[in-house]
Image (tube, rainbow, N blue to C red; front, side, top):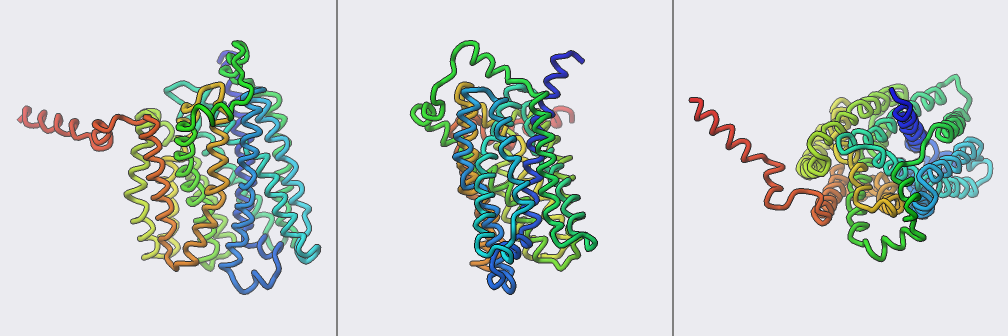
Length: 447
């Protein structure tokens, strides 16, 4: 292995490690959703009303996404002006403070109404600092890849994210054992802080600057205000990027956080069984996602994503209908696996396409704005909106409508961006009728 390849591999590992710890932190909020609602909100709001407790807790989870657009704008600007490496280092470094703060934050019984206020402030600031992480990592990996492996390389981001979830599952489970103290839930956040510091120094030491940015810098093509240029001259590209991200974000958060909260609330299971199920699903997702990336590279990423969107439109409602009709634990686990794989077929390789929409000089800003803008409105709010829809309508299938709308928006965006085949060939790309006709003709000729 050459020195350059070794250095590139180290850079990729440094990027993946940072994203894994972000997902570790995100999972902890999902895992401790109900507990944090009970600890940080007034008892009269959460003790006798589980639905309200879920809504309040998912509201805390969603608050972490409100300032993400500002973080995306800030770190996107840094990434296009100073380099991908500096932006990603600063994003991870600043985000490292908040797991430590959460590990020592007083609860409602200690400081009263200031407890939820402080919790929300922590989530807001952490969201700001995380605003450039996934977008910057996607840009870096896309710029370091070739056409033959871009979907695979970017899908590794999602894969290591699920390994981060699996790690969070183990640490969270240990922290809630009966032998642990009542404040044991704080331990996973402290562990998260330690890991973030470790991964920061790994990134500092081993990550190289993107060759694409080095070329931009060498040719003096760095723009003063990249996002302003995008807003003035590339509104269609931004709108298309936002449209694709709507479906990627809603499908990701609904298939992970929302379904996980259903499992915890709807089935009277011991904690260790919930842990085991979450662990199994996370590991399954981590293993299957790279294969989806390889498949996307083989078919061409734009065609693969188009087929994924159409499969989601067709299959999402029947899946939710079956889940509601046969709402038993084994069936629900099967639903989680099938639904999660279906959603992953889009959100895993999608980040390999998004950076291509924007020019290299404005790429980090464009990707960061598209992703964080959607996350602020729909990404973090998707579990909250889904729970609210079910609460208001009494219909467990209600979240399916949200996903179908998102899939339709993504399909329209891909057509507008002209990243799929012309309409005359679109049907052929999905249902290869000409290939079937040739096969039938060959069979007749053989006879």
